[in-house]
Length: 455
Image 1 (cartoon, helix red, strand yellow):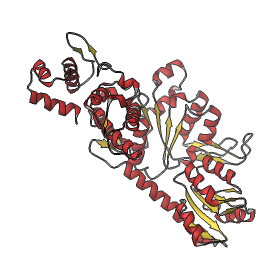
Image 2 (cartoon, one colour):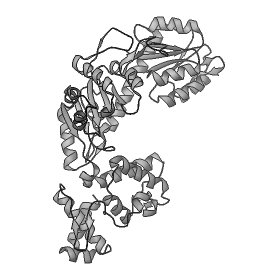
Image 3 (cartoon, helix red, strand yellow):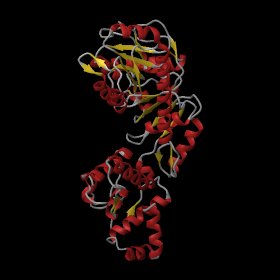
Image 4 (cartoon, rainbow, N blue to C red):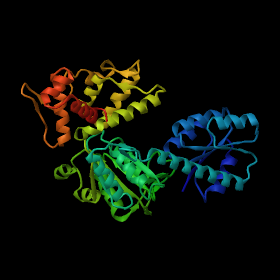
């Protein structure tokens, strides 16, 4: 049920509107600015009926603060003193529409429903825009490597089925991005996609956030709160860092998966929920099961379809694509002209090991775009961790006088790329000497460099 907040300093208005709208909406009321902001932040309000005059403050002052908390929020202004100037000011501040008192309830219902429909369409446009399939990408994920192609294919196979999914991989590999792709590419794409980080919320708060609670269930429970599971009915719940969930909550999560019902804190009434659960972790859950810190039965319930996200080290051929993507993204985000990397910077970025994976690469490029003064990013514009690399690629292979030690489990193309990098370093970037050492023509070397370092 959509969640509607009525903000008016007149109790009679709040009461009458609540009574008229409670059958169609989950209604909340606030008589002042601070109460309204707390509810907007905590209750995931969908639409606000906001009075222009709130006693000592103006609804026009509350509107930008509310939109800052929830940019997707739709706000309808109400006033007994409608003027063209106030209407224009409200629309400029981000209001969806404007109502003049005395209110006509049929008009209010119609306008609120239109506002919510507009919100859904707006969200859908954003999702589709972000998920447009581009060359060498899928649903916002960048990568042409075989590892990423396999993930794209797997997402296509599982996106429309209800089975639970467990996504594993190192921090920064894009586990949430994969979960979003599964949800928005599938038949649940128009329903809610809810995210909660099990490691970021204390156990007591995590339980109330997931299951909700009744008014008076505990000290401070001044009104009923709908839990994340119930709010996500028909959609997907993404449980990030599932390995951090306390054992007591693991048992309750298992019951939700088995019975598809939830019981809010302080209630004896169970509620049916239709949700798909996608969990993610950077831990080895099998090891956690062996240690007794993770329930074995829950592990098998979650791990119906496992998806492992490769580290960036395992798909180095995607690094150039990601660099170009982040260069364009951060230049546009900062209002700057698109920049490019110098040959030296490219070598350093292509050879760096990225212990923080794609997230670290994004941070490096953002840092470089922010600090570079010209159109070309130089080594001086890179963070110290990358700029201090004296020998590009030294984290990926061990150099010696005899040659290069290639790691196991990499493709032939990746091995050839490392050998070329080593030869270039050894010959100080001199292409003719490098070609002679490798036993190929200069033209052949140029083609290899274009293939591996400019694509």
